[in-house]
Length: 299
Image 1: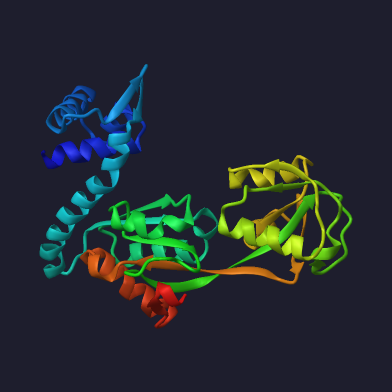
Image 2: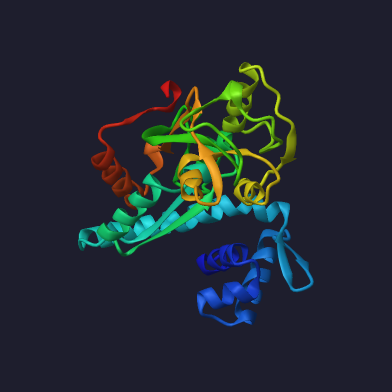
């Protein structure tokens, strides 16, 4: 297996096909295609299903994503040993963030890190399941995970970055009292929720049930980003992250709730497996937010 083949495999996976990968890599499509087929022959398995002009990862291909990224990080770490001595940090930083936590402090930290180390490439991806934090790090998919506390993982450390507060949002024209709305006095309006099984969604639903009300469900959407458009379209109300609700205050009716709904969130990592880039990132975060690192088991 050649490093070039690993790079081409990841490029095809990340750019949804050979054409996009070739454009990103600055090589011809036949070059990418030949390298990918050679890798599949060497591994003895098909990494992609070829559907028309599209490329869809096979089960073997999905399993290889994490190890492939780990290989590239290990190579970059070896190169970092040389570049650090020259005073310039290079390499790649992989972060997966649960969508509600991917703005605010995370963006600020990435911006500052890029300012300090412009030679580092950063990938901010989506963490769809907060319970998978330890596995995606162990499998090499990323070095850092950003999610709500608690973050499970005996070998992980976390640094608390802040908290996410949730507000009610209803279609424009909905009559609500000024100030915080008691959960027990929520309007009897259909709601747009995300399905149970996601920690924050479960807590919100439990808070509503504890208040003794049962608002009708209009839509259960696994696509969190569609909640606001559905509210704006008049389908129903929902719970939104405070920053999103406030930014849309001219298009929806947004209010905090009583009792207040908020969850702290943190960045998690395995201190034993950090690359030089990852170590520099941790040092910068610790300096920015204070000595907040602690074992995830006590989060």
